[in-house]
Image (cartoon, rainbow, N blue to C red; front, side):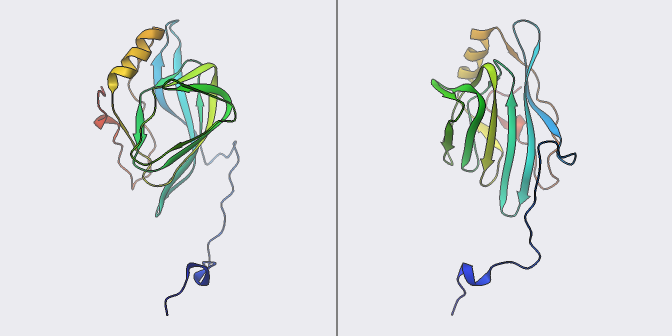
Length: 173
């Protein structure tokens, strides 16, 4: 007889991991940058709280500066976003504080444009968290509409088991 999942639990030695926003072991990473019309730099900062290789998943806190634009994209996994503060446009859909967004595997959304107050989002990717892009003209139009320009991607501190695929985006620099 095969054991049911409940019969094999708990797994000896496994314990919960607790993190706090000011955890010194989890640093902020600048994952996206843009030159705003006023000359300032817009950013998306992320703090990766849990990043697991087996099974793959990522949970993070993201802070979008006001007016920050992120190209239309999807992920190689289901992706859930909760808007904690501020708000953002996801394509033509305004998502204020309290909005829950589910992005199924294979779906794309965006471009994402943070509102005037910026946006703070909690995100979870349930599988390979890397992203793919499409329809780069939508991103270019969103930048042009706001007088902004994309800046090169900053280096990220990926875990050793995961390769950075950002250079493979449609329309990437």
